[in-house]
Length: 149
Image 1 (cartoon, rainbow, N blue to C red):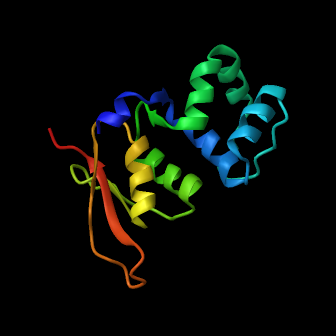
Image 2: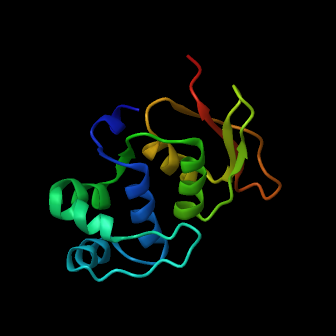
């Protein structure tokens, strides 16, 4: 958990924008160069991402943006739907929402590496609980939920 303290913080939306470019096959160098040049794709997904926001972020806070892309980031504030979206955009996995009051969570079948990646970006106040191994043996179903106060 202490490693997250040194990570730069991105908004949930900016994190989704970066991960969307990564999932399109862009390397860190591609992201940094093309965002700076404004050479951005048009997003046809359900999210309708407007990557110009990243160009603005890079112009305003170039060091923060570069560090987020190259060494990782932590999301400032997650929402339950935002976590589900991040899992889909960054990992290509479908998360299941549980929205019953007091039991809100996202459940997703992830590998250990995917779970660790998710844990590294989650904002303060969220926990990942291990669940059952899935039939394929490579993934487990994890439950991501708010930490009870």
